[in-house]
Length: 240
Image 1 (cartoon, helix red, strand yellow):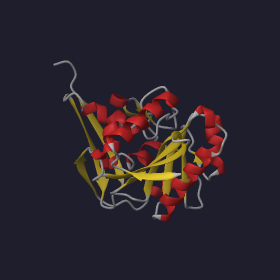
Image 2 (tube, rainbow, N blue to C red):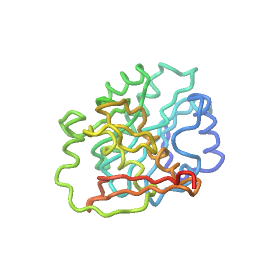
Image 3 (cartoon, one colour):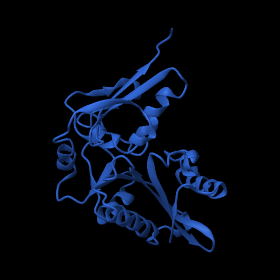
Image 4 (cartoon, one colour):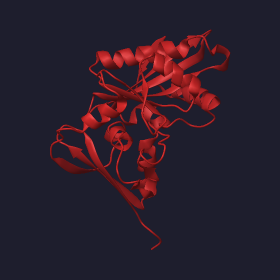
């Protein structure tokens, strides 16, 4: 197993994305630019890779927020069909989780709709969050729901910021904690986990970021003094 910290070389990034598209049938939640170093000032990223006979046999990716390093996300967990059930995914995810916690990480999120993968993550300490396909591995002795509720206790004053990749990971707790109102944001079709299943984790940021991709929208975050995201808003031009 090898660990590569981002930025990666262009040829290696291309090989990884070809591998992921062949496994997932679509592009990953993060773009190639992220792996080439576009977000290094905002997030720490690393890719864990297992090679067999010189070919990619398995991968997983770790993203840690620079502004809130207690939070992280796991993604790009993939195993080549010829190496399924060989323990590669378990080994890679365990190593990424160990590195995260050894660095002071408190909660590592991931998303999955695969029952077999879910059982693997459960064996490694992840727990499923109610109303979602998202799981979290915390160092605290608490249920995911307790962790999310406690996460926002004692939050101090907040300031408004234009959106940036620095909140790619910190927005996850806000959108997974249960809210009393149903529709959180109609522009990105985001609903409370109390009323609808949240099927995304690492892809949540992309849904918000696309709001501004054509120059006809914007989004903003409310950030507490200790870096927690306590509010989000979006705006889109409608017709004229």
